[in-house]
Length: 169
Image 1 (cartoon, helix red, strand yellow):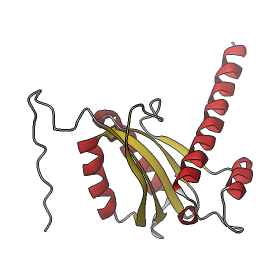
Image 2 (cartoon, helix red, strand yellow; image 1 turned 90 degrees about the horizontal axis):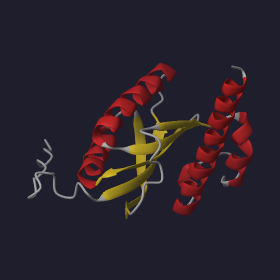
Image 3 (tube, one colour; image 1 turned 120 degrees about the vertical axis):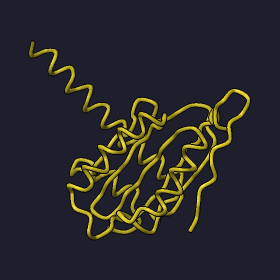
């Protein structure tokens, strides 16, 4: 049985490496037994845990895949990665990138859920090899660009909703 190492505290009483921010991007396949209710529960749980642990990120969910980019303190991301590999709600997890970053890309969101809508199909086609979307066949730069495009679209939708709501008062 594997046991994770306890986080060692440095002189500042913080776990070592806490000040270093990592960005982890991965792709995985849905477990066939995953129900939409389960995905909703995963999102709610991730939102709560991520806020508490200083993690920000974006999660793209398609019919078959999870595509996620998360950022946070190095020891927290390392522990989360260990848990992700053991999580039976998905499989075939592949790390696309894991880098130290100077600035968060997803700083606004503890976990932003981006789903592929019919309106996003043009972007899906742009980043697809062949006729079906398969993130395993897309290089890391394209995956990050794809998530960023979906994020911008979502931000524009939220901005439009907010403006429309304020006009109605």
